[in-house]
Image (cartoon, rainbow, N blue to C red; front, side):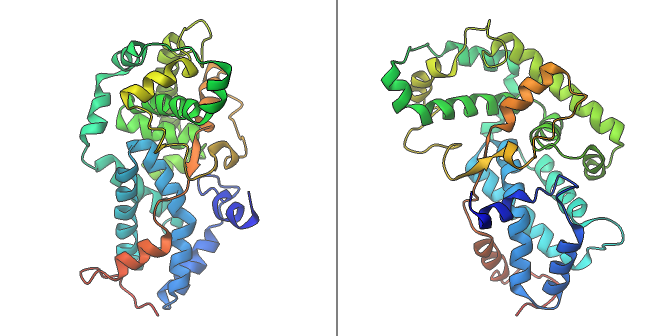
Length: 304
C-alpha cells in the first residue's frame, strides 16, 4: 500500500485513537471561507467509509453509490448549520449517514433476504457441489474468494436493518462502543446488547450450516464456486467484491478485537473483517462537482 493510499484510508473515523476532530474542523472552516479544495478533502476523508458501510448494508454497488451521494448531499446542504459545540463532526456526519441508510426504501434485492437465515442457507445448499482440480483452484482463485465474500455478505443481509448496521460498524469496522452509542442515540450498554444479539444470531446459523465456522458442516466455498457462477451469483467478468480493492477491512481496524469477545464471535469477526475495503466508483471531486453544479442545490456559503 503506497503512502498516499495509506494516509487516505487508514484514518478510520470509527476508531477514536485514529480520528482527530480538529482536522475536520479546520477543513470545515476553510470551506466556509470559500476553499473548495478543503471541502473536497473533507469529503475524501469520509467518502470511502460511507461507501463501504453502505455497500455492506445494501449489498448492491449502484445502491451503495447512490446512497453515498445522497448522504453527501444532505451533509453539504446542512454543513453551514453544523455546531461543533454540540457534537464532534464524525458524530454529526455518521448520524446523518446511518439514519439515511435505515430509512431508505428497501429494494427488491434487499427484500429477497427477508426469507431469513434458514431459507438462505437452503438456497446455498441447493447449489450442487463441484470438485475443483488443483489447476482450477489456482485459475479460479479470484472467483473462489468472490464466492466466499458474496455468501458471507449475504448472511449479514439476513439480519434486520438495525442489527445489520450495528454488526457492520460494531464488529466489522470495530467502532468504539461509546461512539456507536452516540451515533445511534442510545446508551453504550444498549449498543453492546444490540451488537451481542446480532453476533448471536449470525453465529448460531453459521455454526449450523457454514463450513468456515464449523468444519463438520459440508459446505465449502471452492465446491460451490462453479455452481455460483452458473447461477449468476458470481460473475467472473464483473466481480462485485474483489475488484477495485484498496485493502482488507482488518487493515483499517488495527486488529483491535475486544478481549471480552466469546471465542465463537472471534471466529465470525475474523471472517467478516477479511472482507475487502473497496475504492469508491466515483471520486470525491466528481461528487462535489455534480452537487455544486446543480442549480437547485444551496450550500449556505460561497466557494471559490
